[in-house]
Length: 290
Image 1 (tube, rainbow, N blue to C red):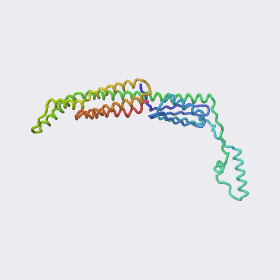
Image 2: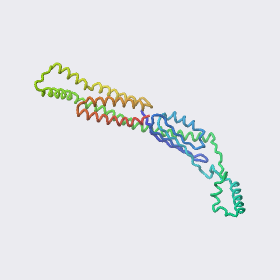
Image 3: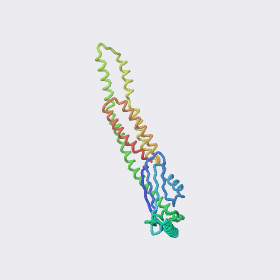
Image 4: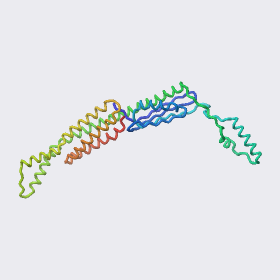
């Protein structure tokens, strides 16, 4: 069963003073490209989170985000009332001594002064981090379920495309014998058009056999059939097959291209073009396989 690298998961929980939400999404990438954004509150756990994500997600461009929403009346930032009062009295006294007007908007002036806002130190106890850790696990679990669902869709698509290529490979067969006879007739007619030209019929047959063998595609058909079977087997071999499936698709392309160059027949070339189209759709989607 294959898995896609594309996925999304989201989970949240409400703690005593804040609501914590975790989002994680992933897209295709050649390796693990991990971006982690955390509030300062949980920064000390960043390495732990990175290690967990690396083990569980393996590969992909992963964006991980935790954001916190304070609930209730408490906020982590408080106005230092005694300092505000001290600034107010000093500014008013300075204005009186200098004979200037006091500010029209006291708050705008005072709030820009040093130490007016005080920040309560926030600490995360073990019980809170355990709750957040469970939310992270739930978000990742959702992403993995999403990946599995997408993987099932990709698997069905690959099976369909492989079956189409296999069917087209069979469609080529009637034209192969016809092609040989057409080539032989065409060359013979060309020789007969040359006046007073005599040739060794035995040598002609030998050269014709050599020429036909150069256009034979049985070997390419056999290798392509093996690649198609191997592609299906690899899909069922477990997770982490994306790169291997990509290599197999490249080999399939080599055989199809060689058949196209050897075909020398309009109907066969049309079939080869259709095979290339099916294979291109496989190559596009195999980039999403984990």
